[in-house]
Amino acid sequence: MPAHEGHHRSYDAVIVGGGHNGLVAAAYLARAGRSVLVLERLGNTGGAAVSTRPFAGVDARLSRYSYLVSLLPKKIVRDLGLDFRVRTRNVSSYTPAERGGSPTGLLVGGGERRTREAFARLTGGEREYQAWQRFYDMTGRVAQRIFPTLTEPLPTRDELRVRVDDEEAWRVLFEEPIGAAVEDRFADDLVRGVVLTDALIGTFADAHDPSLKQNRCFLYHVIGGGTGAWDVPVGGMGALTDALATAARDAGAVLATGHEAVRIDTDGSAAEITYRTADGEGAVAARHVLVNASPQQLAVLTGDQPPTPAEGAQLKVNMLLRRLPRLRDSEVDPREAFSGTFHVAEGYQQLATAHAEAAAGRLPTAPPSEIYCHSLTDPTILGPDLVEQGYQTLTLFGLHTPARLFDRDNDAVREELLKSTLAQLDAHLAEPLADCLATDADGRPCIEAKTPLDLERDLRLPGGNIFHRELSWPYAQEGTGRWGVETRHANVLLCGAGAVRGGGVSGVPGHNAAMAVLEELGG
Image (cartoon, rainbow, N blue to C red; front, side, top):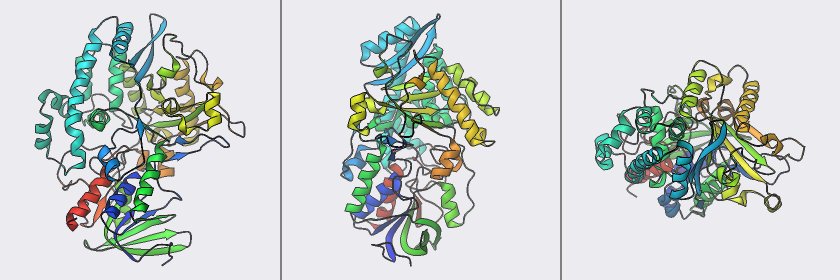
């Protein structure tokens, strides 16, 4: 076969795809003494969890696709001895608003007293703050009980319910549309919207969608780390996948980039994986195959009928600024407002209107988005000269922009959406964002936008869905198997985000697929 240096003809495990989950699986299996080969079609490992320099001649290494860490268990970092750290954000969020013709906003973070005062400034009393505290005390208790189960064999629904041990929380999160809880507990439209946003990240749904896919999204966003906190990866997201690649290699795994798997043949006990390189095709045998790709790609590789893709619904924008813009709300420092999640056009009614417009096939009139500045918490992603000059990054994540809206002309619609999204931000700034944008070596503004169709093209995410499919409940259902990674082929496992308990940068599917293999082998 066309041989990559270090290849053998047979391995205990071949992993298809070198994203973060595939690297987690490779590191665990190699550390357990198994022979492991990772086949990655791109020229680098990391998948969507990479850091790149997207702007020509500019020393800024941005987390190009995925960008925050919540669901990665510390257990995985410890087990694999990863040289990887995260930093907490002192401010959770800031949401600008206009009340009575004057600019104001809601700053959550900086201590209990400041948060309480911010709620009072916006709403005129204590009620909303107290409701906020009760609600997130409840989700915090749920997080403490559910998060440790993600790296254990799948509990049944009844077992998880017993573990949660809170019937009200179970009803709110698992049985009724999250919109009911938001409306029952909060009165202020802006506060309602801030709560709801965690149910809509990459998920095109109404607050009252009977499928409860918004509830599943909300659950994964509030259980991370047992606290729900979203942390900043030091060095950018690529620091995590670089550390994972190092751990896998040091344990003996072979990482073959530029190797695209094109077919998996298996009889359930042995498999042959055909791959393609620039030099031709080759094949390698394996006892187990772990697929760190979407369920659709898994089906293509095994010759099965692919499931219907779940539609992606987000706009991702990366920016580099010469300085942070000033806010119309002069009571808030931009360095605080942008260090947390900066919510734009995400009032409760605004979110409902945006969803209705997109569902009708139109771009939202007021596109909702959320923004944060990585470099305020972790300036290491910028070169020393940029830091000294006060440059900052901005990452924007737009909601309610399903892939179908871009079908007619992806480039034109991307530009139209980007313009209207930034206009919503500008409405809360004391100066246009465009005046603050840096320029690259060719004099072009340092801004890039990615639609669901761009993600489908660049990363092979079906429908541009960042979770590979609709998120699943974190408990066993018919056909899910013991670890949630099993497929109809006994020795082929799904270790990507499309596994049960997948989605987000977690490493959980990679860990669980490795555990399933080692459990079968008795190691």
